[in-house]
Length: 129
Image 1 (cartoon, helix red, strand yellow):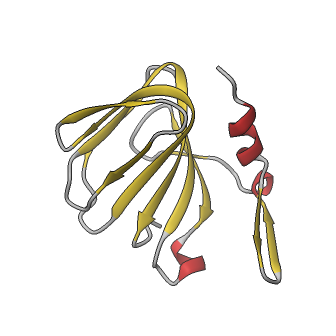
Image 2: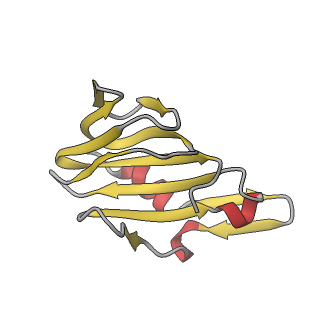
């Protein structure tokens, strides 16, 4: 598995007019519920007046974000590296680099990383945090 693209984002930069934030200065947070899942909160609701949030997600090999729903948020995934399976509204979707998936609000979904782990961007509209 090539982690070069993931590492580019892990150490990347958010550039806005008059503001620059290095991703390397943002700490990884363990997911409060799902073991083996970490998040780097790149853009939070406080940055966007609650409109959206943007997160770098790292799922350890053979770990999962188990079945859940978001009552008010539409969620998108952009797979950067690794592999896995997403169950989105009962359909099994193969996750590999370059795949984008959308989970509307109130739709059950889960993500299961393969043997090499899974690395993705997750975006939420409105913001998750």
